[in-house]
Image (tube, rainbow, N blue to C red; front, side):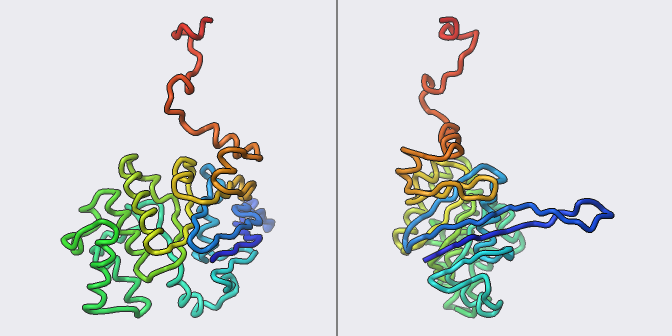
Length: 275
């Protein structure tokens, strides 16, 4: 489904107001991975590691500096804008912040119908049927269609974003930290929804997160990203049971321990600290 080879994204930074010399922030360096049809690849790393930049460069929401991205065998990086726009129906993105990713002046119906209108897929009653179908698919009701984003909770807004992403029946869905801005209980509901949708619609996911617990739940394979580079890849079982890179091990060590005895830190106020 997706083949990324040596993808790069550099941002120029001026050395000073009177200098012509430029340095570059290498946000993504030589990222290489593949995703098979129906699989979920998790890209994990701490904030600033380049995960979101990788996602945007991969879909050409920002132009990559170099490398190759192939969707179902078609090269995206050199595709003319008109051809790329046609291919965009095959791929979609769900953004991190459910508050800023929705237009506050548009109703739910207008938001979800917008891709249908732009791509000339449906209008009138056909668009109404499709939007109603999508809203029900993500667990919302018909009565929500003509409300505005400020009338919904964060979890409901993210469901609207997912419905919008699914409007054109994409095969590839890139999810950029889709649950990080949500409460824990709402996170679980949205993750369960995403897992259900993947199974029902045969979707392929690239799931970006800093939370290894989320990655373990929803993904088949993992790519670990550090300072713009993918430093380790493998199945979920391989990464969690026998990581080879020191950075991967540090990420695993940082997962909160639910057992208070395992998570104990020595303290002079605790009698265990005086043994």
